[in-house]
Structure formats: structure tokens, C-alpha cells
Length: 254
Image 1 (spheres, rainbow, N blue to C red):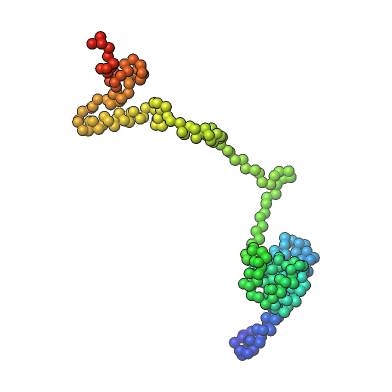
Image 2 (cartoon, one colour; image 1 turned 120 degrees about the vertical axis):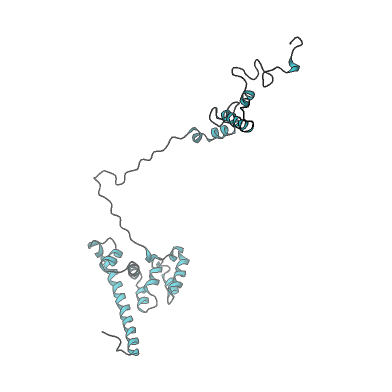
């Protein structure tokens, strides 16, 4: 049917009639959903919930199904909500916002507050009772996870084995680690690999002397380190080259 031939007045009058018919049809849908939930017919048909029945069998979107399911359950608990929907004092969106907040003790005051209010105003009223009501509850998605069938007695989810490395002495005793970090290295010890410190210093000094004078200078390590087999306080102790200072010589020494 083409609407181009209808007059403006006819179009406007018909849209009001269709809106009233739509509201009446919606109320009938709510009553049928409420009775289906009471009889649990959706479970007999194999649907896990009334929401799944509305989306899969009736073809509603997730948001539309959620509003109708909540409103249908609210009508079953509080019949006065049906009269408010029929009089167009509230709508499905506003009823869905407060359906989980209504109790026999606060229904009169809460329904009076949301009567004739917009969706934004009703959301603010619902947030006074529950801050979580500000979150759109009709935008939740139902996710069904199918688990594999296991033999009887076998756990469904095996506990993963996680290899935990053995704790080091520092981890088991933190005070030991802090004490060792504060200990000064003993004489002759170094953080560098054994022999690398004097070896690098020796090579660096030799290269510098060769580059400046063109000849190999005296081994500086030989002057710094005592000869092998001699200790600092043993025989030959004195100056770095092993000679005894003049003031320490005896009177009969040559």
C-alpha cells in the first residue's frame, strides 16, 4: 500500500492509531511472556532462559528482549505496573531500569517518582538506590561455553603443573644478601674476572708507552706487585723495588 496518496491529516491520525495498537500489542506480549515464564514453557522447548527464547525463537534483539523480559517479570510481581504501562505513564525502558529495585515496601514511592519521567531522569532516580543502575543493564551479552564431555571420575579441568625454580640463598635469607652487599672485598679480591684487572692495566700502559716513545717501557705491574713468593711483610719488605730504606739499614751494613 502506498502512503503517497494519503493526505497529511490522514497520515497523522493513522500514526496515532498505530501507536495505540502497538502499545496494546506490546502489553499483550508482556502478558504472554509472563505466563510462559510461570509455566516454564521455554525450558520445555529447550531454551536455557526466557531471554534466550525471546532472542532465538521470537527474533528480538538483545536489548529489546531484555526490556520485555524484565517488564514481564515486573508485571507478574506488581500488577499496578501494567496499568501504568497501559496509561503510557511509563515505558518499557524506564520499567526495566527499576524492576530489580522494586520491593513491596518501596514500590508506591518509587513508581510515583518515575511516573511521567524521561529515561535520563529515571536513570538518576535508580542510581540513588543503586549506583550500578546507571550501567545499561540491557546491553549484556549471553555467552554459552560448551565444555567437552569427560569420562566419569576424571576432572574436567586438569590442574596445570607449573615449574617453580628453587629459591637462591639470597631469596631465602634476605638479611644474608644485604650483609654480603655491605661487605668490602678483601685484599686481592675484585668484582672482575680473575687476572683481568692487572692484565688490562698492564696492556694499556704498554700500549701508551709504545705509542708515545716508540719503545716498550718497563713493566709497571712488576713495580706495583711484589715478586712471587714474597709477602708484604716478609723478607725483602721495604720499598716497592725490594731495597731496604736507608734509615732501616744497620750500622755494619755495606
